[in-house]
Length: 291
Image (cartoon, rainbow, N blue to C red; front, side):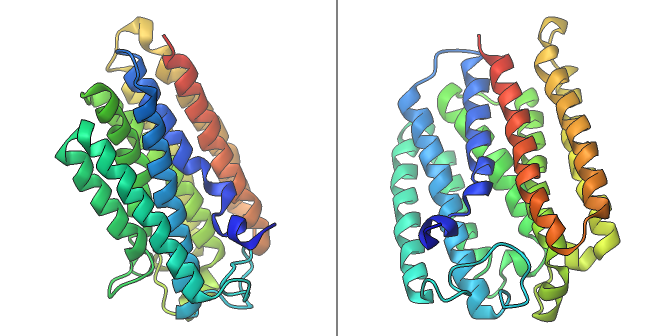
């Protein structure tokens, strides 16, 4: 695969697509959708995600977190396929494009969208860079939950519908929790190498056994959020949330059992599987919200 394409981490991009699709579906369930704005939300979310991935690739290599001992997917800068300078330039270009899209969307969504966009851009770089990189102090999971959950789902819904009922917050939380399972698997696999270089991810802080339990709790939390959402709507609409909740619960249980036993490189397969479950759950939410 082309190193630049690989550096976007295509297997994880579902985490950027799903929340925008779900936010669009939620907005579409209460009114007409402006598809140009929906497309803008999708492009903006993916640009921020890719920019974050590029920055992560560069800074983890520069900090020594990605070495020959790494058992995860190959990273372009650490492998010498792309120079740190080129990767950082690409990061700046991608995030500048994201800022441009965000300014356009703020014309409709107002200052809250501008604020969310700026926070997302800062955190995309601050995930692995700066004096207090989020990934290195155990806040990476929180960033993933907020950006791929509340920010992307609710930001999209706000731009398209101008409203945010409690049910949508619960759906956004479920999406964010499922997105966090992806970073959890990644960090669980990397506990030994991250600990060596002082990268204190949440999994490093929790330890191997507790991290595996935490992974299962994220899935359980996502299913619970959707079940609670079902209690907030009329009985005729409850299937919109109960069916995705069942999918999240059953799929999450199966994945949690697998992660509980997997070791080392075996965990790589659960990155894609975790993303796939988020994609399937999101697809169910989208289909069930089509009017």
